[in-house]
Amino acid sequence: MIVITGAAGFIASALAGRLNKLGYKDLILIDKWNNKAKRANYADKQYQLLIDRDIALNWMRLNSDCIDFVIHLGARTDTTETDVQIFDRLNINYTKGIWQFCTNNCIPLIYASSAATYGLGELGYTDSHDVVDSLQPLNAYGRSKNDIDKWILSQEKTPPFWAGLKFFNVYGPNEYHKGRMASVVMHSFNHIKETGYMNLFRSHRPDFADGQQSRDFVYVKDVVNVIVWLMQNKPESGLYNVGTGKARPFFDLATAVFNAMNLQPDIRFVDTPMDIRDKYQYFTEADITKLRKAGYDKPFTTLEDGVSDYVVNYLSKGEYI
View 1: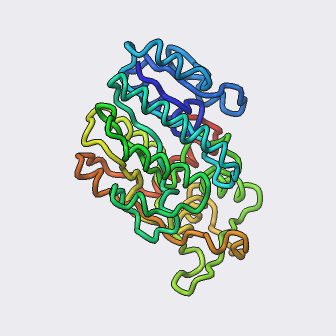
View 2 (view 1 turned 90 degrees about the horizontal axis):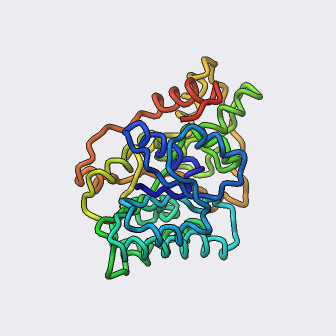
View 3 (view 1 turned 45 degrees about the vertical axis):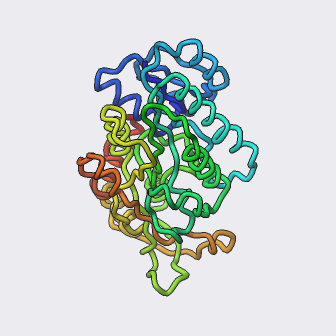
C-alpha cells in the first residue's frame, strides 16, 4: 500500500490520479475530509481507504506491515498565516511523527518541503544540505518547512530512502479550492474572464522592468512525474528542488493566459503594496542539478504549453485531473 497525506489537496490528488493510471489502486488517502470544496479532487480516484488526519498515525502503526511507501504532502501552506502553533502542529510535529514511523518500520518516505525556505534568495536556490542552516525564510510557513528540513538532516537514523521536495511555483488542475493561495495562472484566468485585462505588480527596483519579476513556474503534471520517478527509482536520499530550472517573467505568464483564452493581451501595472514590498521576491529559479544527476531526465513542460493545457482543458471547463 502507498500512503498519501494531504490527499484531498492540490498536488496530492493529482498524484493519486497519476498513480491510478499507472495501476496503483492500493492507496491509503489521508486528510481532513470535511472541506466540500475539495471533494471533486478525489471523487473519481481509486483507493482502499480514506483516513482522517488525526487518527492516521495510529492507523499506520497498526498496519505498518502492509505499507510500502509514504508520500507526505499534507501541510498548512498559507504563507499569510502567522499563528506559529498551527505550523508547529501540522508542519513540524506531524512530519516528525511520520518520519519516526517510517524510520522505525523501514518504510521509504517522500515529504513536501518548499522553495519558501529560500527567502529572498540571498544564498541562491541550491538544494545543497550545506546551506539549510543559513537560510532565512520570509514567513512562518517557510520557517516551518526549513525547521523540519534542519531537524531531518540532524537525524542519525533515517528511513531506507527519503526525499524532501522543495516545490517552486506549482500551478495546474485541482487547485480550485485554494482561494487566494491559488496560482497566478488561475487568478489571471479568473481576472481576465471577469474584466478583460490583467494587473501585474509594477517594479520598484531599477534592475527589473515592470512585469519582468520572475518565478520558476512548474506544471503540476511535471511535479507528479518527479514524485513517481523518485518513488520508483529511489536515488540518493536528500533534499531535491522541484522546478523547471528556468525562471520566467510574470509578463510572459499573463501573456500565455491571454493567448490560451484567444484574447489580445491587456496587461496593466499597479504598485506593489507597501506591506509586502520589502519582502517581495523579484526572482526565483530552481537549481535542479542534483535531480538531473540523480537520473531524472524528463523535460519540463514549457510555461506556454503548461498554461495552454491548464486553461483550455481544465480551467475553461471546470475539469479536474
